[in-house]
Structures are given as structure tokens and as C-alpha cells.
Length: 414
Image 1 (tube, one colour):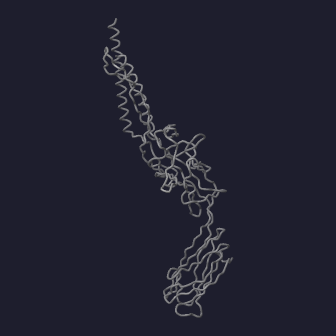
Image 2 (tube, helix red, strand yellow):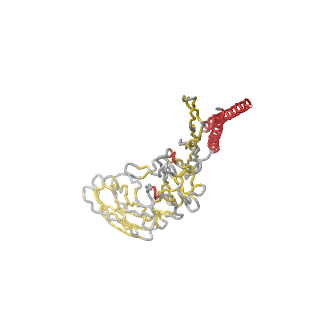
Image 3 (cartoon, one colour):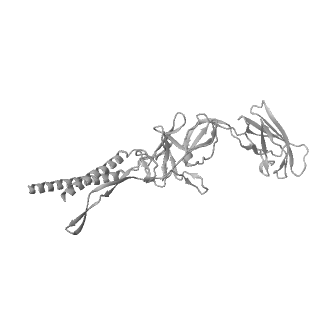
């Protein structure tokens, strides 16, 4: 039977070597961003039956084999970064990257924008996600881009030139006190026209010569003009009435034409807006809408995996979303290398999580300014290495023992 021990010991040495190779690779990649470690799973080989005469005496195993190497799925530690384009996934999920072939999946979120504003990996693979609708270099800015279907995810490529559209002012609300005197009172605010120019909307309140009690009445003139006053776009006149307490009762002031855009002039109601109170006058204030146009400053990524464009006017908008993919069986992914995997029939096709309304979502938390380190536990790897080393030595001892027994048997035969 020593001959069986010889071959059993060889199988132990061979397969312990495989386990050591796997552990060595894990340890070598202890500092590799996004690395997914492997564990070796062993299984016994077939049994040889023991027969003594006509009576069965059980069986003896014929050695060991490597059944599979499986992926370690635990979360790796977070590594702080100074770039918003460095991303880490907390929990399940994978980034998808595309080169010339099929998509690959990775936990390594070390991304950046190349010279053409493509979001890519360090070695030039494109990151996949959903782009905001765009036409002629103008992207429709959104608060958040909704993921399209898995099959339609595309390379995230952003325009080098992008403008934030002008939003002309449509409303101006004034707040202030015109007092109870007879001196004209003025208020003004800045409004934006359709061309992106800042203009002035100027109000002048003049108390009517003839007053009808109770309360007071004023004539108000609204003038829309350039900031330097050289061009007047519109002049409108209306009447305002206050009650005996000084609260605004009514206003007939019509809209003002701001170089082609109508602006609703809101003087408020009651004590919310313009009042006529016998108190010391203070500076009036106003609230207007509208936004100036702006040119692209650059792109960044927020903690919601949104690609954000920033403009010279201080505005921001979402122009794309990095997709996080999921699989029914992550262990079924084919390992291309330590950080990249491909889908297989065992993993199933990539899919998205969905919210309560059936919309596609990433379904996991993404952290920017961070990277996920290797998920290999060094202390565990070293412990396993010692165990496999002892297994290797023990199997080698089995071989030498079996060899000595066979030599002794051959000498006895002689």
C-alpha cells in the first residue's frame, strides 16, 4: 500500500503548491486598488476500496485536488484621495469599463478625464454610464440623470465646450417702506434679459396730491433700462393703494418689457412686500429670478456618481451618471485579472437595481475622493501560508516515508 501513499503525497504537494501560488498572488497585490482576493477550495479524490478475501474492508482515499478558486467578496478598506474622480463602492456592485471588446467589471474606481473629456481608467478604458441629452455641444442640465437600460449604457464622453443657457428674469418682487411723506421714493433691482445682459428695473413711488381716506395712494413708474441708463427698454405706470395701517391693498402696475422678456412686478400684499408706514426708511430689497449664461469651467463627480459640470456663472448641473452594475451570482464572474472580471453564464447578465417606482438606480453607495483598497487580509493570508507550508512539508514526508518503505520491500525481496 506504500505505493498509494507515494502518489497521494505527490497530489498533496502539487495542490498545496497551487494554494501557495494563490496566496502569494494575494499577498503580492495587497496594495493593488480594487483587487479582489482568491481562496483555494480543495476536494478529496476518489476512494480505493479495500477488500480482504471476500469481505469488503472500507476504502482509502487517492489524494486531493483543487476544486476551484473563489473570489473573496468582503469590502476592501477605503483609501482617501484628493480627486473627485476617484470613487469607491460601498457594498455590492461593479463599475463597467469598455475597451475594444466586451465590457469588463471592476471595483477599481481610479478614474479621470482625458484631454478630450472622456471619463477613463488609468490605462484608457472608457467608463460606462448614462449621458444627459445633448445637442450641438449644449447638454440638458439636470438635477440628477436617470439611468437608462443596461443594454444602452455608453461611454461617458463630454463636450469640451459647453455653455449654461441664459434664463431671462420673469419676476421681480420688491420689499420696502415708502413711508408717509411726500418725497418720491425709489427702489431698483437687477433683471437678466434674453441675451444674458444685466439690466436695471427702477421703481419710483410718488404720493398722489389728492388723497382719499382711509389709507394712501401712490403713482408708481417702472423703468427698465441698461445699467448705465443710456438705453430705456420700457416704461410703465400704475397706481398702488395702502390701507390706514400702511398695508398694500392693490396695485395696477403692469408687466415691464425687459429687452424682449416680460417681467412681472410683484409689490406683494398686506405687509409682505411694499408698505407705507410712519417709520424710519431703510434700504429696500428685492428677489428676482433668472440666471446669467456661463461657459464651462470643468467636470467633477459627486458622491451620487453624478458627473457635474461647473460654469463661470457659478451654476452647476448633472450631465451624466456612472452606472453601478449588479449580478445574480458574483462568484460566477470570470476573472480576467485581479481587478477586472467578465460576465459568464454562471454570473448571469449584468442588471440594475430598481426603486419603488421601477426606475433604474445604482442601488449602493458610492464615495468620491476615495478608492477601495485590496480586500486581502494580510494576517489571514500569512496564517494560511503557514498552514499550506506545513501541509507541503507533511506531504513531502509522506513521499519520503513511502519511498523508504518501497526500498525496504525491494531489498527484502532480493
